[in-house]
Each structure stands twice: as C-alpha cells, then as structure tokens.
Image (cartoon, rainbow, N blue to C red; front, side, top):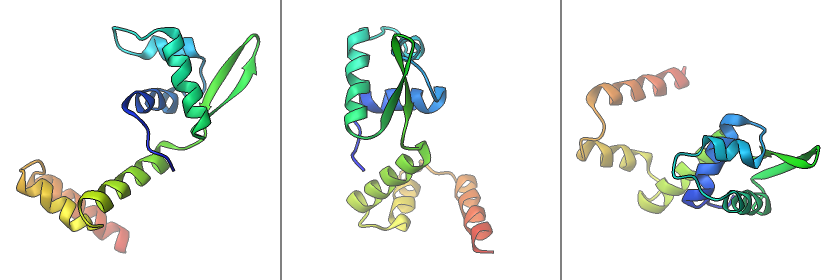
Length: 120
C-alpha cells in the first residue's frame, strides 16, 4: 500500500468520515483558508490512481468513496513507522514514548490491560 502525502491524508480522513461525497462536500469540511475546488479535485484523482478512492456517477457529477479502510491504512502506517524507526520492535516504540514522557503511567497501564485482554 502506498503512503499518502499530508494533503492526501487530510482528504482521506474526510472521506472516511463522510463515506460518500462529492468534491463540494469535501471542500465544505476543510478548514479555512479553503483550497481551490480544482486542487481538491486533483487530490481526489491522485487518490483514485493510488487505489484509495473510487467514484460513482450521480447526476452530472461524481460521488467519491474510500476503497481502503481507515483501520487498514492505520495498521500499515504504524507497521511502517515501527519497521523504519524502531527496527520492527513495538517495545522500542513504547520505550521511546516513555523516555520522552509522552506516555503516562496510566496510559501504559491501559495498553497493558488491552494486551492482557487479547491474550485470554
């Protein structure tokens, strides 16, 4: 699965949220200052060419919808991050956040509880 640029990811987040929409619907949800209609349309076409999005005709326009689930993309992105920066070790990832104090003890305990619940 290909990686997305920041702009492509922003549009995908909206498509995952909206499920089916046209370019105007995406534009409506984007924060100000809003990009040009043609810019958003180009990003959506790029997402189509990468296999993330498809469309169906609705009247004179198109409705766009995601082909890749948010969960699948998230999993692939996390795996790439762990492989690229932490030598494939989730332990190293958690350790990194603990050392930076970005992960509280309470959050770590919650993660451990989730792991324990998956094991049983």
